[in-house]
Image (cartoon, rainbow, N blue to C red; front, side):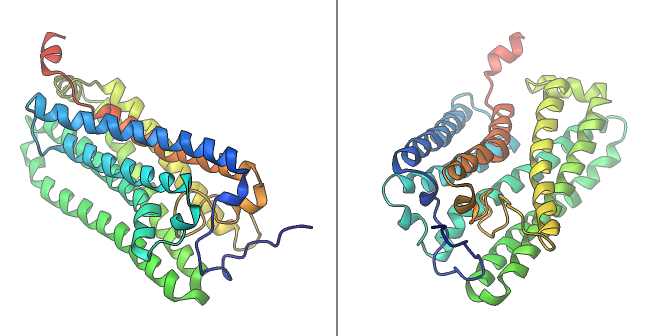
Length: 309
């Protein structure tokens, strides 16, 4: 006897659970693996923040802001998966705000890091050109304000959609469509902007000198930046494709829900035991990998070793 197909428009009382997809022992093993990965990243970032104090680096800088954002992201993902050790029902019956915080806000944090990367590499360009074009420095404040506005817009869209989905059951699909369209379009635009910055940096010898003074290089910046761009853009383009294609044909998507955790609710029912595994793989590729690359780039370096090298 086949299980009834999950209908997102008729099942709004409780969020979908990941548990039925796999046997308990498989779920437990995968949950342990996922939790360990996020916990290790959390510990690594925590150590980096202590090293900022140890080496007496600036306490408020691009580096510390990046690390704090990634630390918050890793902590939320760790808490989310830790719920599945004992009681998956608890993880799916939280209050609306806590549920949004654990399931949706990590994606907002990733967008904030992408926006901040644009600001950081734009500053690299400005510092490299400031010697010959000091007038560029006057554009820093407008860039800061524009980045803040875009980040707040992204956050507001997610919060608004979360509230509307809870109160407007009949318009749920439209709300989700609007959220996906706005969020992933912003992801693509920020990725394009970052790629332009990286291209300009690769053509500037002074930028390489500045990056080397920070313990990095143009080659490292380009490789990490391009990888992050490809990962975020592929996820956004996939979501936009699913959004447009699903209007005319039923498809299996991994991120067509307001939870924004890289998987659609009915994925578990349609893929069976493989669903939870696919869920973890997608989180690793589209979330853990780019975040780890950002943390690696902004890791705290020993100033003594940098001077020697």
